[in-house]
Image (cartoon, rainbow, N blue to C red; front, side):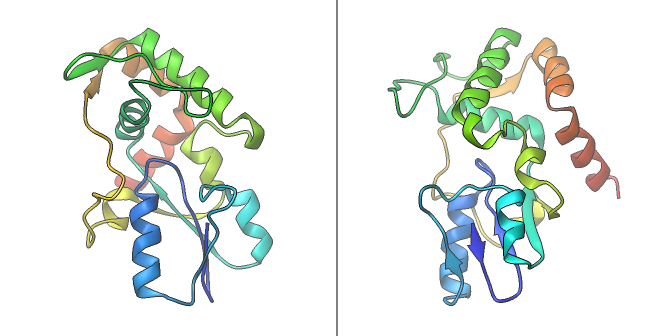
Length: 173
């Protein structure tokens, strides 16, 4: 979470939050960056500062693919991993269900597994707009998976319905 003189920024995982923190460190040295115990927090936690809250919403399909890519490979108890898909592949329905289970367990203590769970009633800025003037390279995952299968995409639209609805509302506004 980033606290400035006039607003608070909710940092949603896999939305360029590391790049956002670096940008605020350069642009607004007076901003307070809360990274402990974790920089990612929710609207519920941010609203306690009685300032307007901003957050970034990423295309839900891109967000899911980024999450999956970030957690593939070798994992451990503190950093669980998703099943590895060789080379560039597609997330199938079973993989998406595993990702949902992973997100539900990983973020169980704060009750989130969708972007809108993090964002709440924040002022929402779309990912491409948020990062238009700043390339995102700091914490970028290696793209092993590039798409969701049609069945996985259909399921994603059910599980992450609120994310897709809000995203589509904003891009069509």
